[in-house]
Amino acid sequence: MKKIDIIFYSLLVLCIVIRFIPAEYMVAVYTPSLLGWVFIAFFVPVTLILFAYLLIYDLRNKRLKMLFMRVLYFTLTVSFFVIYHSYLKDAHS
Image (cartoon, rainbow, N blue to C red):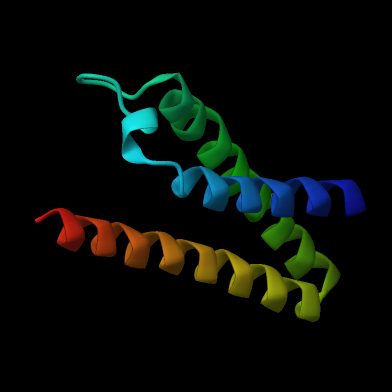
């Protein structure tokens, strides 16, 4: 279980790092570039699947502290994405 936790948090950090990469590298002319496709097709789904799996595991084993911390980190990361995206949208308009 420790390895899955490490993978989940590593992917969460990678998602944040990739989000700071300028949009020119994430998007080709009309579709996502290779890095954009890797982000869309690999990092996001694997992170969501691991989050759901670890959430169920924590609920079954009554690991409430780990459950709270994981949900908090995930919620903060998603909130950061939303705020950063709205900031970029306002900056470009």
